[in-house]
Length: 101
Image 1 (cartoon, one colour):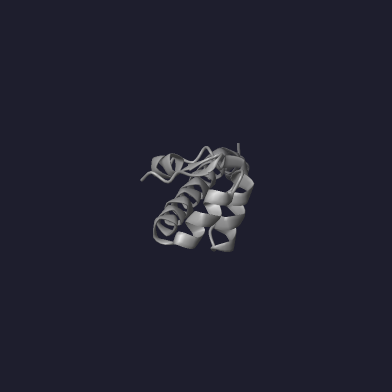
Image 2: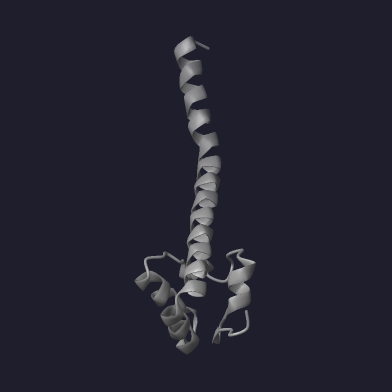
């Protein structure tokens, strides 16, 4: 095997082997950003009476996501209930904002 042939095979292996890590790493970073947006949105909910009222009147997660987007946060609909913020899950349900803190 020549040096050039070995180098070419090594580069192909390196490119193929890094895709799963790159995909996985990118997904983890996206989840972290989504959870950070979720935590920041929760802080805003606790501080802003008008947003609490809007969420209280909301009927489903689509409306909560639209409220979050109008406030400048990006909450993904496909993983809205999978995000790991226990505070958020405690305060928000499918029926809206829980008044008890």
